Picture 1 (tube, rainbow, N blue to C red):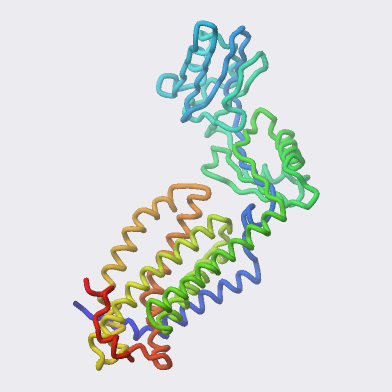
Picture 2 (picture 1 turned 180 degrees about the horizontal axis):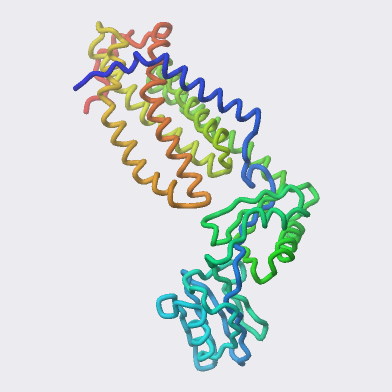
Amino acid sequence: MRNINILKYRKISIIASSAFILLGVVAFIVFGFNTGIDFGAGFSERVQIVPVGIKVSYSGQNAATLSISSGTLVFQERSASGLVSNTYSSDLYPTVADVAAQMEKDGLDVVVEDGSLLTSNLVSGFGFPCDLTSTWKALNFATETRDVTIEDVRNALDSVGDAKVQTLGSAYEGSFQIRVNVDSSDTQESLDKEVNDALFSAFGKDNVVVMQSDFVGPKFSAELLKNSFIAIAIALALILVYVTIRFRVSYAISSLVALFHDVLAMLSLILICRLEVSSTTIAAVLTIIGYSLNNTIVIFDRVRENVSAKRNEDVDALINLSINQSLSRTLITSLTTLFAIVPLAIFSSGDIKLFAINLTWGILVGGYSSNFIAPAFLSSLHKKYPINVFKEKEDEVDPLLED
């Protein structure tokens, strides 16, 4: 096995980490955190601004409902004789014109706005499933021939104050995330009406589909942020106690320094890339704390075993040997986890994408700190708190290492 002198790069690794974290501090001073609605307090709404393809109504005497399941329309009619269900999938009815023709046969009143739209681009938002009555119900479909730009939405929301708009997905989908800061006097109902009235006025009420709406007040967000930091602090404190009991104080301090490094490195990336900080971020941080600690403990366990077995050899050489002995395990574990997480970071959206991005970076940083930062500090602390000094009873084999 090749013995790479990893400790030789201790100064370079500490300088590189310090520079990156310092860059994050600068980003914090200049920009601050891009807090999500759960930490920043505010009103958030996801909408799709897409054209109406068809309008339907029902003038019969039975109870009728219309729902959307996996992009497929389902019309159900309940009478004294039972339930009749009609499904309009994109496989059987590829265009709006095809759907409209079948709906008329099934007893629905239909007005076709654009029969060329694809059924597969059906949009489902608030209001589904719905009871069908004589009042027209609009069905919306995304189209590549009509684009609503982010500037159009921003202009429409000029009267709403400090509204922030973000594009989601492809341009033709017309999907946008809107966020508005709140005052103590604002309510979800008032902001919902203000935002939607502005959008309805600019794009037409039937063309705006509300997909999701969230509201978090200032008191709740402040409490959530405080509890999140408490959770991280408790986790780090318990880790310090555990490692102190499990090993020596030098190991405990080195582990804690590596964990602080991981947390600061994650926050630095979030600040530099202007990623949103939300409860999902806290979940990623806590996950990486556990992941990184596990990797560090594996290396330190090997260090303790080597130091105990080779008491007369140089401690730095034994630390370096221990890192190399655990390197293949670190690489295999990290790569296996990344194979599962990276596709989510690339292809998913929303909170899952944000969690996957944070986790991907955390795995890379955690593997780096376990092999470079923690051993470097352990080597330095050994000079003050020696790790190769044993009591007589420690001559016995540690039962945890017998396997």
